[in-house]
Image (cartoon, rainbow over all chains, first blue to last red):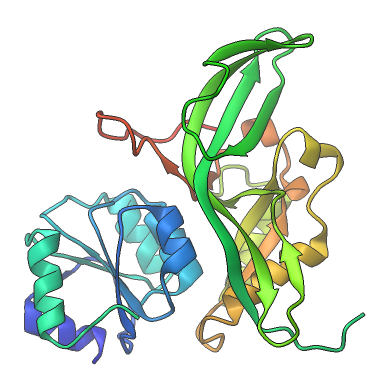
Length: 111
Length: 183
């Protein structure tokens, strides 16, 4: 399954410009340290964090996309930095619990 | 020197806090890793000629890297954090290298050791290369790569507005505001 598939099936809103890629699993955390220690390349990272530091953290572990949930507003500087690094920032109004349920329903699991 | 082409994995992971303290007498800054958010001696205390007070506390973790093939262990107890360059100083060597590496789709971060020790004894370049190798082994390097640079390349550390990849303010009831410079 690719990022394009997930966007279409769940109705996520792409905020940054990026290349679609294969998804390896899902990682859920609102802590950068947690992501750096545990997320894997190709993971979808589900978070409510919107500070631009999510971009270098996402880049460091090479996630396929960052999904910002709960309708959190993502600052333009975060979006711009993500575009520069070819990192997908996707937004949804769904709470994290519901989004994760939908991702699980698509057959995605933590890796 | 081992002939092993190391395949690194993270091990001995310990979550905790990076404490940033400042001395009100000499204005010195120091950092250290602690498993506790609250300093054992309180927010302000005297140690010899220093009067330390806690300036900031960031949730972080420390780790070692172990080779899955030969078992060689590389300790990273001296790593305080990774800093993302924000291009705040155009004549900084880190900024110059950032532009050069980005043209080759290599994204740079700066590896900081704990202060003040790291000022005199920075993290050896070979260890930063090992850390870069660890992150590059976990990604498709045809798309992009990671390079971790030593912090002594920063032109003027006191003016640097780079941002650490730390969790700051996570334990606060207030929503996080824009991050303050380190010093």
